[in-house]
Structure formats: structure tokens, C-alpha cells
Length: 128
Image: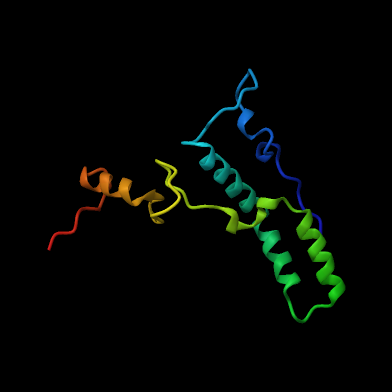
């Protein structure tokens, strides 16, 4: 199976050095964990379809063993983050990994703060 090489922008070595003339690391997100998760999301999006196809071949019960072994070798040749399960749903404001509202991609505390101060369209506190 032939697949495209990873674009230079997603290379882990160059990820933090883009756009800085001095070669220092640049933090483009709230913290490094969020930046790493964003890079993993790009890699998973880029290789996701191929990775899913190879996994289906590997775990199929009807295909010959030789084909499964070839798919296993091809999967090992893909970047480590090509599986979508490596991504972590983080809050885009605070980078908190737990207690997130998936629809808005923010944590529950930030959601409550924005809703209380009228900064979220169509959302208000429940009153009964």
C-alpha cells in the first residue's frame, strides 16, 4: 500500500519552530499539551482513512494470513499518532482534558462562566 509522506508542517521536530527566525520554540496554543494534541489531530486526519482500512484488513476473519501480515507491516510504517484514539478532547480556552462540553469544545467551568455572562448565544441558566 502506497501512502503519502507526512507533510513537513506536521514533523514533531519542526512543529514548535515554525515562524520563529531565531529557531526558538514557539507556543501557538494555551500550553504544550494542547499543541501536541493539535498535531496529533492533524496526523490522525491525514492518515485516518488509510489507518482504518488497514485495521479492517488486519482483523478480518475472511482474508488470508499473508495479506494480514502485509497490512500489519504497513500499519507499523505509519506514524504513531495516526490512530484517532490518540487525540484528547481538550478545552480550547484552558486546555483542561476532562469535563468538556463536546458541542462547544470548552470545559464545564468555562461554559458556565460564558453562559452566566451572556457570551454564549442561545444558552442561559436553567430556571424552574
